Image (cartoon, rainbow, N blue to C red):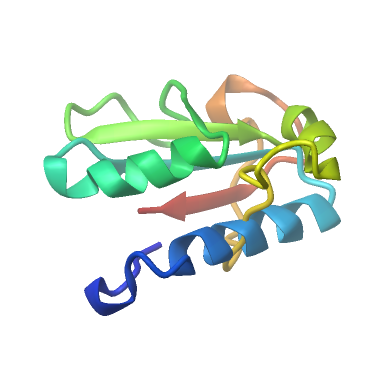
Length: 118
């Protein structure tokens, strides 16, 4: 996922993330996982994901530990309870969904499957 420099600070990234999360929930998925970079350039992306409830996790799928990568996941079952308006809306995210293998971030759950490379 990438937001053009000219569109940053307008909520575009949050809107995409809310769409991705909502789509994943509608499809019955339980977790979203992503890989992003460790460089300073990726700091805003990591902050965006964290604001939306993502936490760091071990490498998933075919990824291996890499000093240039940060792996993050969002447990959709835990964050769903906060989608009733009791929070700032940080867990309601969206964007284009990509099919992925089950077992993301170490769980063998057949309902997993969205990955986003940032």
